[in-house]
Length: 203
Image (tube, rainbow, N blue to C red):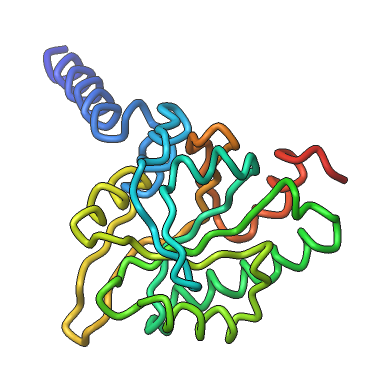
């Protein structure tokens, strides 16, 4: 009898511990936790100064509100040969869909480099050309002050770890920002098309 009771207690404690660790069965991984946290809290884009591929400086939050568009953001560095290539390919496809549907006035793409020491405007301009980015649809930028990079990455839940080969390990996803300047969703590459329909009401 005591053995059965003890088993039940251990089972309950195990379930409770699992719930505590996973956030009530919701937060199964750090990446899922990040996405859920953003969708719940919807933090505002920070007023950090960015510099685009043409050398034009702008304050991130104010720019989003002035553009009054949905913004799809990814974080990259131009020397990346893995995740950033996949992100770039997805943005190329999104750019095509945006143009085909005539959504240029409602949706904009932004690729932000977290390697400002290397990715200056000239490098970003060259990279944008390589990606066949249309300036009215897709902007490339990096921070104007490297000291503000941590705050930017923290707001977007981006983790960047230097590796031993001069590159970076980082998480990758598409972050959706509403015209109000609030982060509203984090999605995988393969769900961007359906969310584009949802957010813009297009078919």
